[in-house]
Length: 303
Picture 1 (cartoon, rainbow, N blue to C red):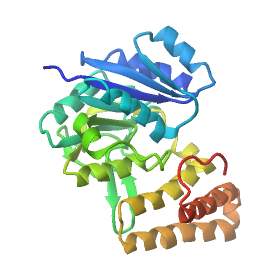
Picture 2: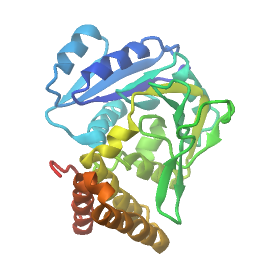
Picture 3: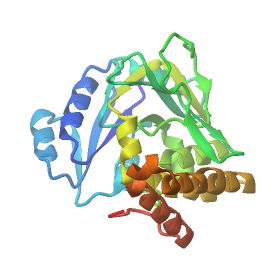
Picture 4: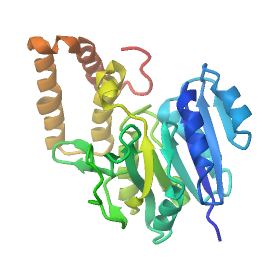
């Protein structure tokens, strides 16, 4: 029996990226899938263009921006209301290889305990340079990292599935039973760190998380642009603390995060002349720590 997959794409004013993503999905060699686009209240004409150019796509329109977590949860609930076997969360700023979904499914079907599978993710602008080969968590430091970040692909990850601590929410295949037993994304995160926390819950529930190197996608991501963004810096700072809390991390992780990372960064950005350009990011970090201490989660409308 062919396994049915719901491919879930979240769009928020991302028309220029979403249309090429949908075009790449048309070349998938797996026959049983539904594409669902959840729009988070876009104002760039996205919904009209998607309807006209991709009439076979299921389009769900939210009235406002619910974030990565809230928007995807709308799509996940839609998928659970159908007879789908798996859901593929896929960023709208990606393009996929035709056999990418097939390799993910083949990996998941080898063992009912496999809860999530992720591909090798490359930079779209540098097609043979890896952005993520899964993720690793350093529980002593309370930090996370992308495995293989900025490495040129020379076959170092082989061709067989391997265990990882987490896979990126940019592209993750999720078994239906994970959604039913573990639940959906935690909407307190809004955006960033949500997939790490989800993967921790999934692993603690007894499921395995794997990367499949033969599955390949390309991501239109700019690490520098993200690093320069105060709002991204806000969510990354605040949500790391939320992650430590929800994952019940030890005191060493808290000490390292708050002192060796956050406090040291704030002092450096405050006293060193070369970091005067970081005033906006410093303000965002202070707000993030304050909000985390006060239990203010979800969307931050301004920093």
